[in-house]
Length: 271
Image (cartoon, rainbow, N blue to C red; front, side):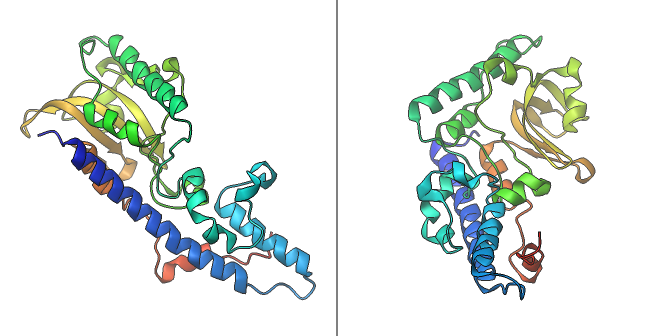
């Protein structure tokens, strides 16, 4: 049975809450680490301040802080906590991007959906497939699914981005729609499934994510849209709907917050 809108919204809210809580806990420790770090004997107050700023900006994956809105700039490590609510949507600290311009978001959603539909129209047997309703519900709420971790952690290959998100043109999205003749089943690790069509929605280290219309008669799985994460040597994960995918994704490759977290606490005064 397809999930209701309320079930999808609840799963999405839980996912975002888990990621947000983990990131907040991580940044509390990052701030404490930066504030208590002792500079080298030759360090000046200015160089210590600069090193602490650079450490926080690296975590946020910001290379040009002068391009940030002045209200979001980090002067002291604690700024990341006092400005937390403003930073969350900018840096997807709850695991998702959400644009501020509602009209622009609507345009990008339509381009994404139209791109998928265009691609499906070019695959034999998939011309009449309807865009998955649960994914459309998801798109009305967020513009991407980034996964657990802070920006540096995600961008440097520690996380799978299940949905790359909005921002592509219709043709760019259509180019990532595949059918059986494109080897879709093999790409997704669904060798025992029949597939009609699908599209690549995300990627990560040794991973590719798809939304695929498929069935598996042996397992009693009828035709339907499913969410697939092909994880290389770790095999594949297959979900019947967005709710199941989010429940799995909310803890995927989450940075450890126990004693192993120390690996993310370098000497901030070393280049």
